[in-house]
Image: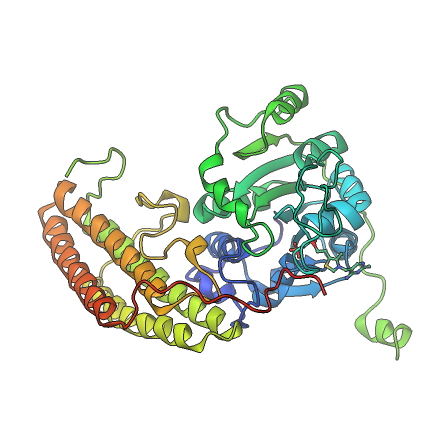
Length: 278
Length: 175
Ligand SMILES: Cc1ncc(C[n+]2csc(CCOP(=O)(O)OP(=O)(O)O)c2C)c(N)n1
């Protein structure tokens, strides 16, 4: 978070566009919208200093609903877009949002390198363990024995991707897990993530009532992490690997130099318009 | 009523901030649910949520009057003294469905009002500040009135226990 003079008196609602979300009633993504806008209001960030970048998917519609700068990008490329933006405009608070399909399948490689690069941005993955927008196919976080998709009638059959573990080995410096059933807790995690200097990864467990109605059980399964966040990657790895993926809180946080390219803006918008003339 | 440790509200500004937040978040949520039902082509339930938002708005304005001239504290969302994950009248989003019926929507609202009443009743029973206790008791009464009003509405429904109709074109059928 840099270059932001806070504007006090802004309410979460001031960060919503008023566009009606198309998410299914009961979708966890509503709570992510609520948590993001509460976090922005708490930090009193001026709208023009924040950008929300996303890929494609139900969850990736977030930029349409938040009244900061937004870019609803290409499937799996949110982190690449966000990194480019942050390189050119280090003064912006860059938030990146998307789903588990967007971030861990097609965008999986970008995820690894964004963690490793440690640019100062916050990546929120709304993990519903399914491709919601394309009508319910298995994603990398879907359990191997989930049989409810016609594409994988016997289940995907391969082990689940463990986002927090991958983030840790790839070099992320802030790793947290939240639950949309606890929006105020998620808000706290987002505030900490935004304030953290470096790449912050927040996995938001976000139930999909349409394709994964069994997620109703999550409410009973999630619980706060038992220990304080550690800065020791070995301890973090052990905790993450021995956990069932349902503990929420900051799992790992450390401070290492943020990567930010030196160069400033080398073209003005007029020159860019010439290059991108259609 | 047994006091819940760490959730005792001592000052009038702190209490009013809680009350205003509770009412405003409830109005916003009903508006959001109205939008959502409209988007999903359930206009009857959208109208129910809009009506609840309108009534909530009146109540929120009334409560805000009590705070005129007072400086309210700034409390981060996660440090509010709720016993619920969000403010008590926002409801459990999981209970929603695009085909929900009027009975289901009103039971959802009744649950919200009950949680609101419980919050105020807890403050009325546990605050050490007499002015806060009295005002909280008054607000708890008002929430009880809302509950009675909703109960009467539910009783007047032709079929209060109706279940959602079957969706003949459910979203999870692959083409
Ligand atoms: C290049 C490309 N490939 C595939 C798609 C089709 N597609 C759209 S969204 C999506 C996955 C959505 O799942 P997820 O990212 O988990 O988000 P959710 O909808 O569940 O929030 C896919 C495969 C696409 N839009 N672009």
